Every structure is written in C-alpha cells, then in structure tokens.
Image 1 (cartoon, rainbow, N blue to C red):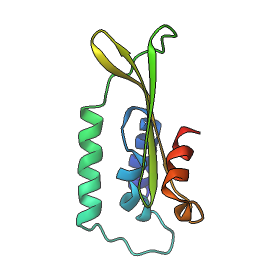
Image 2 (cartoon, rainbow, N blue to C red):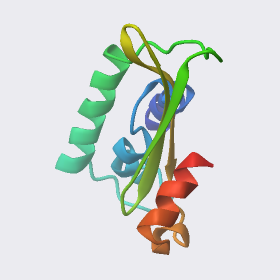
Image 3 (spheres, rainbow, N blue to C red):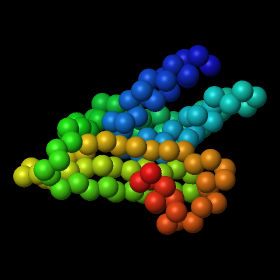
Length: 121
C-alpha cells in the first residue's frame, strides 16, 4: 500500500504540470481505498502508463506576462474536470498552469455547463 501512496504522492506534487491529471488517476486512486480488493486491471494499467508518459513529456510552463493575451480553457467529464491557463505569444500558445479536479458525488450531478464553469473557479 505504501508504494502506491508514495507514487501518487509524487504524482500529486507534479499535478500542475500534467494536463488532465485527475481524469488520468481515477482508477489508481480507487486502489488506495481501505477495504477494497487490490485489482490492477487494464484500465488502471492504462492510466499508470499515461501518467508515466506525462512525467517524461511534461509541458514546460511559462511565466505569466500581463502584456500577452490570456486564454482559459476548461473541459469536464462525468467524473473529473480540468482547466488550462495559457498565453499567446509569437511562438504560439504556451501553458501557464494546468488544473484538474476529481468530482465529488454531488458534483457529478451538475449540468455540463456548470461543470465547465466550475473548472474556471
């Protein structure tokens, strides 16, 4: 159990550098539940591999520049939401920060537009 907790602890520390982080760890966090059986299924393996790939290819974040145009993009699913704060300069769109959030049981019932707005907050 502690090796799984350690891995996800490191992953949580790096979550601001990984796009769609909460969406990509749902099966892995379910493996940490106290009275659940440890079943490392295909979905958990897939999410683990996606997370490993994200660690090795994490986006390089830029510093916020008040003189550049700023873009906020959100996306939501049935169980998680995410947001990207980026700015546009001569070389294209550069990410400033990624954010993601696993939805609580009550938040899962929100309408899609409410989930998208919740990603901005």
